[in-house]
Image 1 (tube, rainbow, N blue to C red):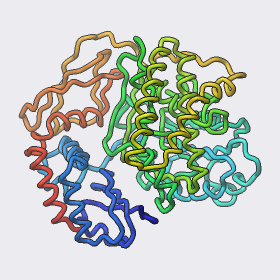
Image 2 (image 1 turned 120 degrees about the horizontal axis):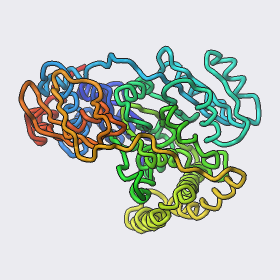
Image 3 (image 1 turned 180 degrees about the vertical axis):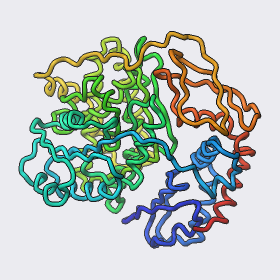
Image 4 (image 1 turned 90 degrees about the horizontal axis):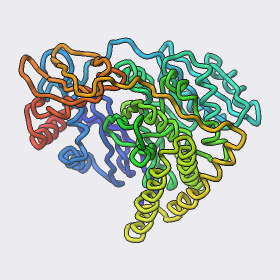
Amino acid sequence: MAKRMALGHLELTHGIDGAASLDLSAAVSWVLTLHGSPVGRLDTGAGATRATLATALRAWLSSDAAQPVLDLLAVWATTPGPRRNIDMLWGDGPPRWNGALASLSIAVCTRDRPESLHATLGRLQGAVGPGVDVLVVDNAPSSEATRALVARRYSHLRYVRENAPGLDRARNRAIEESTADVVAFCDDDALVSPGWAMALRSLFARNPDVSLATGLVLPASLDSEPARLFERYGGFGRGYAPRWLHAPAALEGSIAFRYANTGAWGTGTNLAIRRRIVRALGGFDPALDVGTPTNGGGDLEMMFRVLKAGGLMAYTPNAVVYHRHRETWRELVHQVDGWGTGMAAHLARLRRAFPEERGAVAALRTWLAVAWFARRYASSWVRPTFPRELILAEWRASFRGAGLYREASRDLPPPGRPRPLHGVARVEQAVQGSVALEDTSGPLSFAEARTADVTVTSLGRTLGKVPLPVIGGVVGEDRWRHAVAGAFRRELLGATDAELRRKVVALFDGSRP
């Protein structure tokens, strides 16, 4: 096992020269990007050379792991203008977004961690553009250290003190203080990437159907053994493919078995939500998350509530945050314990708010006990990838979560049922629409429809039809472009996936900065 592992970044369009600045004598976990968009991870052992790294990258590009590369090239091929072949797409990348951006407030909720907060705010300063409001919410502090830090080093940022303890209370205070369309939350142990704010602002602008978005969370460092264990246990990363999640039956029946495990879609470390949506849903539950007995679950519960009210969630790997993982074994166990209590508290809250979900919650708890805890514990005896103590810590904690939620919510009003975020679609059958790729941009509108069958053409040639769920009368631009790219990748790029992989390897070999 590596005693030290560096985190490296390699831009594929720079070829192997993209690794020139990093010492290869240590083990490296490479974040691979294509024109700045993350597309995957590749780990190399200590003592690698340029030649062995190049060989590993060719093997990666030839494998199924590189599917996000092909998907991204196909999406870029759907953008307006003259059609571009794969060589041009690899060299030029996506067109620059020049449209209006969603207004954004960034809330950094913190409690008694001024040193960690200093690093977070320092990175934020260089990562947000003009007009972005940054708000520091000091939650039930035991001293004036955070206020003093902001006054001394970050006086241009807004400081708000929220005396009632609890991360969800701090989040709600940020919602109250903001006037922006979108509020993004960043933890005080996270470092945002330079393009993080722009990725979120453009995503919400291009996709008016999106209620909530999460982004890619990568480790800030892998030098410590607990940090590497956290990544192997599951970490916060949720992959390199953009995804959308919508529960079509949310307003008609039970959806919890399939959709309540919302941690599979992201984390509150990197989460943004439309302000009007969170207000319509009644805000975050103050009985959940860090600073309350439950120690977690506030982000999970809000994601589920968005889905239950008929909203759309998006996951975008372009909005990257680096998380400073726990550095000691004790801190790691405490975090995993919070996962167990937080998930169980979220499910307890769900049972109270939605009686029709109780059977589904019971089934989900059984599935988690078997598929997540028991199966992982059994496999750990055959292939021990991380200590069994972590599995047991989360499993034991899951039995305490419901009681902790009752304790935390004792003096609070019972959770209410949210109203639907969108009107019920009146047109049951699919409506017809069309898209000409060379000159179509922006979201597609289908008033009062539930689904749309969209005919796609390119330079006068009909590629076929794609079915698209309609949410609030709209199909966002990113969603329809990814659907078109997935349905017609061969037609757009002029080759099969096997041929495309060989071409991508050749392009990588010929690339230079």
